Image 1 (cartoon, rainbow, N blue to C red):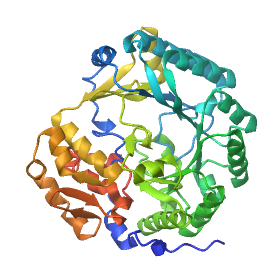
Image 2: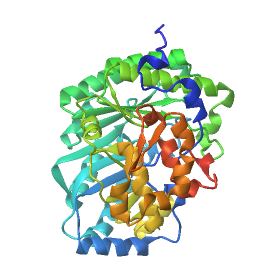
Image 3: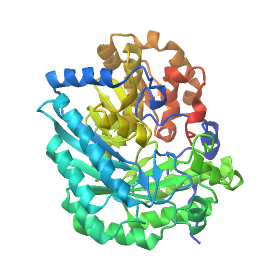
Image 4: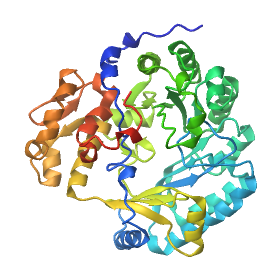
Length: 467
């Protein structure tokens, strides 16, 4: 049995007692305002206007997200928008709907449609057959002109792909893979209905490297049923053997009233609060001890990975896919439930497949809600993203950009930082707010202070815990 690594193996990892004090729920801030604040008052007409404005003044390259909702089996922890089915014939009509959505966007986007990033998420994108992926990628390349160095990534379920499938993805131009692992412990895997061996993941990652994929990411989740600090230390050890370029470490949010599959998880099997903090500490200490750099909140990367380089150079960004090296840019979301951003507005497609397909068949953009950001939203978004990406809010930069005096406009928020300052997570300077090295582990607790929509405390039960 692998020994549990001590939480203080790295000088900047906070003590467990401090982490437990921060264990409230809050957003992950892949956007601000967060998606739960979108309104049905924003629809297809509003998006039409935004696309017309972009067509007149195209701006920089786009990011593109494609949502494939299908999964062959349900993972009990999952909170994604998904359709569980073994009927793979569902793939072809969905690809046709995506093509129709791209056709609707074609004339509205104008001729200059350069894109520097493409991400397939799900669900399970590899639910689609090789032929369907061929067809879909051809349509995407017809609609968007991808830059030579574009990041083209796809989420992969190790249970449903083999070496030949990975080779096909590489031929299609995918250069980044994200493997869903979650935990290598067999008892935990049985509890969440996701069985996959360490050996299968190891072999697939070895093949992916041989094929020349530029970056491999692995996802882990802590806080799952039957996890213990000892069992998770073994998973961390095994992940260290695999040595992916990046690791995403998410905290499980148990919200069975919102997500039906989670009702199959027995609440009494979830780790108690003290163990949950210990699980996080085991993972943080393990990855830092193996040479990974902590990017922020839930991401680790090897020192030579572009994400780590961007972090050190102050060029890190954050979007709906998490931390990114890509500059802040417009995002086109394709498929059921996809979220996009054009200018200072967010939008989301219909969340159910029938509703999405009905809009597409009627020749309408399938947008059902969104949000136009006002001046206060934009100010707070800059502050929150500076904290999440750079760990520092420079008052002069914010004041120049937004024409406000931070100490006046944000006086209540700066006062509410006091507990985080006292605990050593944040430093408040005359001209800046700065996250300390240990504060990076609870950085979203600092960001939450500036979230106007959380001022009343309402809605926090929608989110995962900070630790």
